[in-house]
Image (spheres, rainbow, N blue to C red):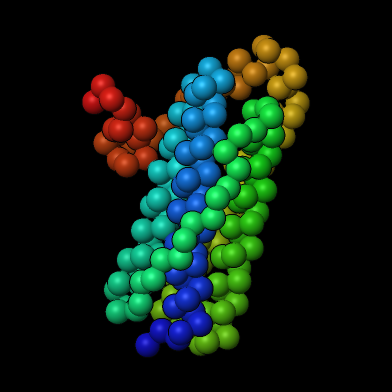
Length: 178
Ligand code: FEO
């Protein structure tokens, strides 16, 4: 049986993943309204990925007959002074999420909960990729984004992000034309 402490921490993590979804959706809207549709597309896909992360935790709680009690979402930033600032925020946010996943693993070990540890190991590996990707884009943006050409290039480049067709990660699946 799952401990009260771990149960609460997993509910909190669903909130963090949904806040990531909401933050990245705000960033996507910011990019689209700044005529950076490639970055908007990338961020929309990322938002969907965060929703999938939230569902993984939700399903784990349901599979174990644990309590699902979702806290209120925190209001995150909705405007940025520049595309670079938004990407830097995305990187900082992923570092924050990594710290929360690490805390969850600490709790799971302290509570001797072996069943949740494979899921948390998946997330620990996922966070390596999440930080590496957002950190690299933030660095590249810092190199080029003070030039219009650089920004244009980055927007084209990021717009190439591939999502499996028909998957919830495919932003086209949600576009008004489909
Ligand atoms: Fe669910 Fe980007 O961490």
